[in-house]
Length: 109
Image 1 (cartoon, rainbow, N blue to C red):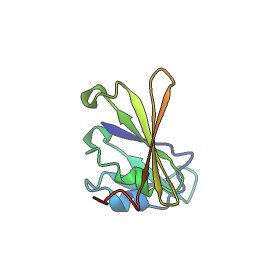
Image 2: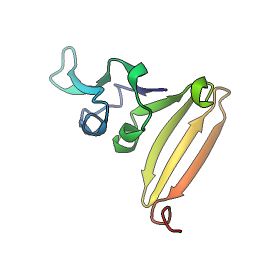
Image 3: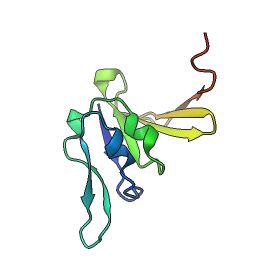
């Protein structure tokens, strides 16, 4: 399991760095630019908690679902829309699966 940060989409807000329980995501200066962007030097150390996905306002972070978790290379992304959490899985064959969770109703029993 690991994450990939698209530095072209990253705005350097630092929210992912703040929530990473492993302290793996750092804000790094960009060559020729005074701005910083998120970077993970050791993606193999990622715990797979997906906290960074949920915090990124630009959807610049994707989660790689390796064979060890049954993903066979699929990519997981996250989007918050109102009271819904939308999880999307893109399979290696190009197919998409979407799971929508109403966060206001999720913990009702």
